[in-house]
Amino acid sequence: MKRDIYAYLTTTVLIGAIGFSLFLVISDNRLPFTTQATVKTPDIQVFPEVTGAIEEIFVSEGEQVSAGTALMQIDPTNYELARQKAAASELDATAQWQQAKRHLTRLQNLNSVSQEVIDDADIAVQNAYATLKIKQAELKKAEHDLENTRVVARQPGIVTNMSYREGMYVTPATSVVHLIDKSSLWIAADFAEKGLSAIDKNREVNIVFDAYPMQVFQGQIVSIDSAINSGVESAGQLAAIQDDGRWIRSQQKIRVRITADIEGAAIVAGGRASVMLRDDHGISNTWMTLLSWMRYIY
Image 1 (cartoon, rainbow, N blue to C red):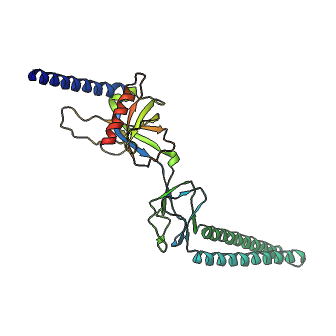
Image 2 (spheres, rainbow, N blue to C red; image 1 turned 90 degrees about the vertical axis):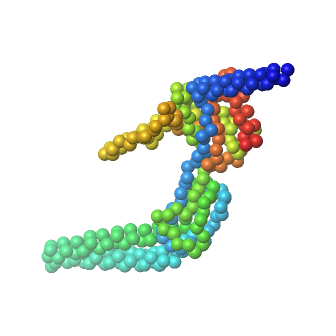
Image 3 (cartoon, rainbow, N blue to C red; image 1 turned 60 degrees about the horizontal axis):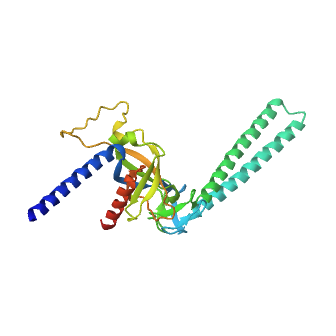
């Protein structure tokens, strides 16, 4: 009797293992499944357009900001002085231009003045006008630089990774704030290449996020990458040969972009997920539900 129980358990485990193996093989080819999926979002880096010390910071980490929101103020002292100097130069150039015009008008009204003198006066007017335009451009740039001492958000997003503090020196070469747009979250899923024939654009998928065990979300494939890094050949470079001594090499992965119905969910960029194509027989629903339970435990 005891031997029969052992035989029954052994047979059951063996059948279960064979059945699960068949499921994995069929899934890889007909219903691709992957645990290598990551939540992505565009990184909006905010760069200052002028150099200087940070005088004041108006936002805090994790704050939601809209386009046009002031993020920080760079010390405007030097830029205000530059604006005043440019404004004075512009006024002086205006006066020089007007004086040159008046001088030309007086010469044109005199009958005893040669044409050469009038031509020289006309050239002086043109030179004064050119100088005026240069000074106006310098004034405009000075005003623009002064305006840019207040760093503003060009796009809406959530403030993150803000490592700068008041008093620190910033330059246009370094981003001072990162903004994350959670409305643009998407999932980068890496499927085995052999399941590519079953992956179509607009195909629906089931998603289990590590952040939300016991829940299955739905999504949709929006694009399939046409190339990966190893498949792109650059002109003028030697061939890069991969050395693999295995009899059966590892499967190649293909990147697929997926959008998910996650409105209201606290999903963060960089979060991990598992993805499986949906089917009409409930296989994907059953497997992903079991996986979501396992995620609750592990």
